[in-house]
Image (cartoon, rainbow, N blue to C red; front, side, top):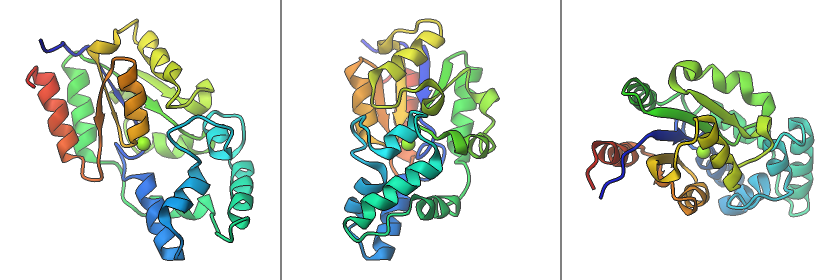
Length: 215
Ligand SMILES: [Mg+2]
């Protein structure tokens, strides 16, 4: 039987915007470096929660400049100029928010379904990303990893979102993210996960099917 949906949790980067990972891969190709290696140097093993500087900055334990310096040092060991700031420059030129995703979040909330943003983010980016979408209008709850000190794929970040929404059951929840490891972490809790690819059309169709109660 199709479960009813009480809440939809959204990731931010790569869901409401183009993928940060895509920007990193482009940067890797431009440098003549293996894009996968560059991704690993800059963002660490992203399907895990570790002491890599990027994971610490996302948990709010390290400032952005400190993280950049540590990542540059990791790259230097392999002769790779792995400057996260160059990646962010590419992201900044990759367009604004996806209006189709913004519209969907708005209509979901208007339909009475609870909404939350669950984002691995950086304290220093806060003002910039919050200007990209009408955060207060779209989301009842905002969980920013750098504020709560917990980041995806740690299951506690999803549990925190569901608790702040008033105790929604995981199996009545849908989660959208562009990173497979994050979707898998949510699915392990019993949340229904949707992977958002570079073209979000299929993800939006999946979301519509789930909300319509069809398989
Ligand atoms: Mg993302």
